[in-house]
Image 1 (cartoon, rainbow, N blue to C red):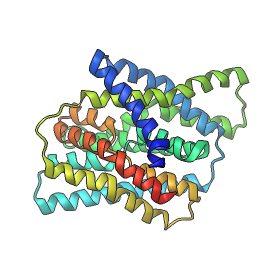
Image 2: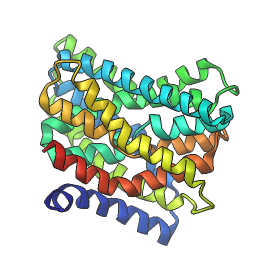
Image 3: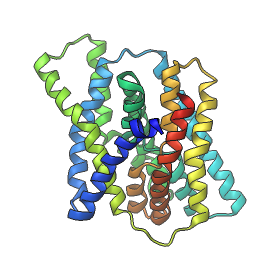
Amino acid sequence: MEIFFQVVLPVILVFLFGYLVQIWKRLDIKSISTVAIYVMTPCLVFRVFYSAELDMQYFYMVIFSAILLISIIVINVIYAKIRKYNQSVESGLILSTAFMNSGNYGAPIILFAYGEIGFAYSVSFLVLQAIIMNFFGVYYAARGKATIGVAIKSVFEMPATYAVIIALLLKSLQLEIPSNLFQTIDIIADATIPTVMIILGMQLANIKWTKFEWGHISYGVIVRLILSPVIAYLITLLFPFDPLLAKVLIVSAAMPSAATIVMYAVQFNAQPRLVSAITLMTTLVSIFTITILLAILG
């Protein structure tokens, strides 16, 4: 219970504030999320990559992400074939289970649980997941309706992509940013996590409680919250991960479905009700599963 009150509850309360404000005022989330995506997140990402000492651990993180993604996609494809689901349902299940909320939810949980060093790893994983989500998420949401070029284009429309490139370029050229300019980046970066947490609460308030397909939802919850961290744990045994990074990756893999994926499902009409329902239920159930996982990992 101590882990719940010290780590999980503070995060849930911030989500709750966003949820209640949205129920009360029905604000335009798009305007707030645009500021977060195009201003705040790039500043946070830039600060992390500019300040971090990149080593082989980051390379292992890339391999980890690829293996985890492929594993979950394969599980979904096999399950869909066994149950004889059509391609639309298969895509909906992949969208709901292969992409985790490592940003709005995962980063603050890891910050509270593992401190600034763990948080730096978490933000790096967040960027990697955002790139994967913007490519494969768009591909599976728009399956048969859009080309791979659309998915590639979506990656390069991400401001965070350019923040990483600029940060790495400055590091490689050993160019220092003036302290007053870096202080501006610092102030904006500090505001990023609480803002995206509130946005997630607002997004959850917009998900409609409709007639749920409990068979699909139960499957989605099991894959996203149980199978994913188990697979993540097994992957960390294959490489010489730093113990803290291994914990960060396992906890990140146990996060609920990404709220961003709901927008893709709606935009491309890829089972939006199913994706929304699984996103909502995994977020609610994760309150318990993440608490248990943090207790197990220590």
